Length: 291
Ligand SMILES: Cc1cc2nc3c(=O)[nH]c(=O)nc-3n(C[C@H](O)[C@H](O)[C@H](O)COP(=O)(O)OP(=O)(O)OC[C@H]3O[C@@H](n4cnc5c(N)ncnc54)[C@H](O)[C@@H]3O)c2cc1C
Image 1 (cartoon, helix red, strand yellow):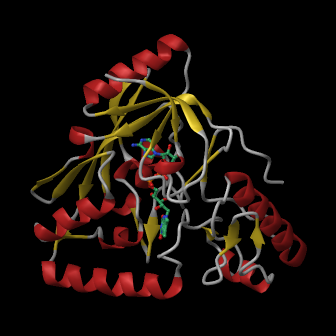
Image 2: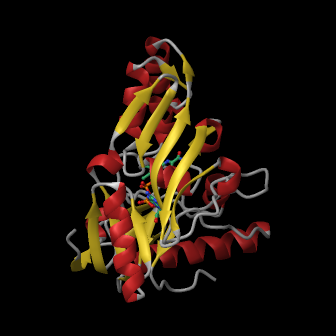
């Protein structure tokens, strides 16, 4: 077990912003996750896990916590009949690839989600009508209190939400899929990828959807577009000219720039539509208030 101090987190986020973690470690097995949780508990250190950082804004000043990254055994994927057993650190793309090769369908939606299984469970990631809740059978969660399986209802999954809190580490998930022709899976994934590429800035540094869709006839993206925010820039961050619910790192962005854009977007949506937009992106560290 090797715990490093002051490790820059910007390279662990897809936006490429954020300061250092006061402590950082890679865990390669469930036993190592448990050891690291005991290490943090003994020192009164908070624990947070990063996946692929594709939905994460880290404070520029950094994070006073032990940040874990899951590797090896806790990022592996195995097929067992109609089930996929995936480590929390496994990329969705790898799990989808293994499912397709085994002729198991139902996880195709995840081709649109460039994160890990743990990140997907954390926020009940979803796209194109599918989400983790529909395929999850159970999840192995480690925390200072111990390690145990939780069902989707115990996780409290709902639209882009679970009850998980920092300090709870998703070390494994079991997905129950259904038999499907690999060629049909491949065709659907190709179609979804083409739709995503046409609508989203997939070749830019972003963190996915900034806001959850509000209870309104307009999606968050359409609402912010109607507010005239496409291309709006603060510092090195800009609202994507392609899709207004994405923020791009247009060069030298800081997390504070993205937060300032989010504040402006919330203000404009409230002023024009009376809607309080709620952020989808996860925040790590002490960040400036969004209001
Ligand atoms: C271009 C683009 C498109 C996207 N499209 C979609 C989309 O269509 N649908 C969608 O739902 N999302 C989308 N996202 C957002 C993102 O990919 C998802 O939210 C994804 O599930 C995040 O996974 P991650 O591993 O990157 O998590 P991270 O961003 O690293 O972390 C997100 C949260 O999960 C927690 N976490 C991560 N791993 C674990 C773990 N093992 N145990 C406990 N907690 C953990 C973190 O602490 C953090 O709070 C998109 C992102 C991008 C960049």
